[in-house]
Image (cartoon, rainbow, N blue to C red; front, side):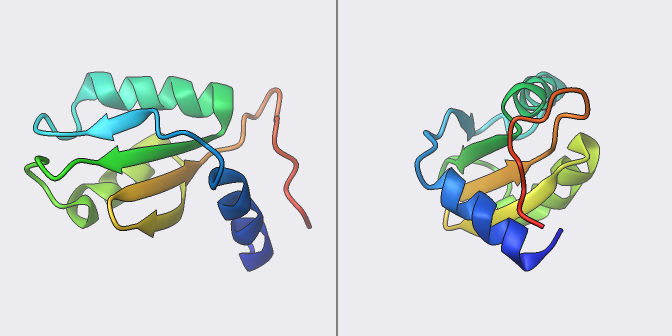
Length: 96
């Protein structure tokens, strides 16, 4: 993914609501499945890591990104932006 594409996705994510939260339970299989469905449908999601989370975001993010086969677009404080293109019906057209 190019820098231009990342900047474009960051711009799109500014207006996205944060629908998903990681808390005490951290990342469990049901949560991963929920994020997988969300990425398939929406392609770009924003996650909020709560202060009550037992793990630091930097600890579980690499594993989460690898499991979901997604791209980590940005991490700002407790917010994380993930992207994964829908192979059958892409909604977001990335610049070249």
